[in-house]
Image (cartoon, rainbow, N blue to C red; front, side, top):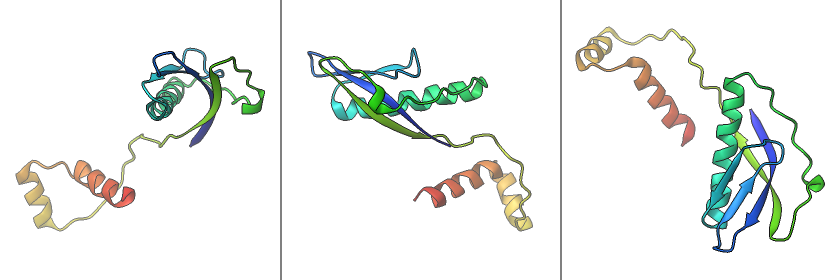
Length: 124
């Protein structure tokens, strides 16, 4: 699922930025530079949305960015995150008997090996 929420960046005197999300009260972060602040905003939004989803709390609608009112030293921006379903699903797979025996002998978790292999293939 994809989410885009407006945020307000407040420039601090020391060059850092305080980040707030008007639609998500309490979702606040800070970055030491603008690049770091953008990264921290994305991280904060992702964690906040995951929390809401885990607790079955309704995710509020995002306010249109042009509706935001900012003060001096502030500017609005949009932050995008993608939340992937992490819930495990059961699948049946077949492997040669000798591989199964070697995996057991080595103490390998077939689920973990398969997840690692799929993650490598799907994210490169």
